Image (cartoon, rainbow, N blue to C red; front, top):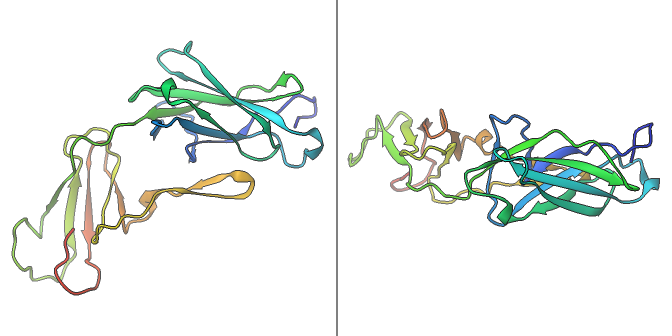
Amino acid sequence: MSAASGTPTTPTQLFNSNQSCSTDETTPTYLRAREGLTVMGIPGSPENTDNGPVTVRYQVWPITDPTRITTVSRDHAALGFEATAVFPADAFTDGQTYAWQAQMVAGGTASDWSAECYVTIDNTAPSKPPTISSSNYPDNDEWNQGGEPVQVTLDANGVDDVAGFEFSWTGDFPVIGASIGAYGVPHFEDSYENPKYFKRADTLGGSATLNLIPPRGAGVMTQ
């Protein structure tokens, strides 16, 4: 539970919606919060089994008004394991950036607050679909001679918060998620590390160019 002084230690391994905490206000994590925002942190160490459960307290506020604090707690949290809590959906406004932090409470004594994590709430789907163009396979072209990858440019079509694109030859798209490891620590899978289905835009609201080779199979392939 504690350092040598006997005071609770500040929670570590901070995550929001299973994604890593961003401690840089200029690069917040973009998250949906229509059903609330799940946050978590690890109190203490699993070796401190003789100290019993503790409370992990979380607070969040809009960076434009630090006085508007919403607080939630996870009681009876196990030392050394991720302690999850949920900020209510009505604590957030779409498009605003928020800071949140965590502290551990044990025996009536609280730890220092953790570093601040920054999130921007994005509850709104893109208002327009992306545009698709190709330099070597133009629209309405008939049979192509083949022999080279299809160069495709995907563009955000004026939607300024698009970070990247997901694509498929078959219309089946993989699910983006996280696996849960030891002590409840999530391992978020960066979708852009899978070039088979994902490509990051060159800038927020920008475009991405891909060189694609159609999968093996009979018939005309569409993108």
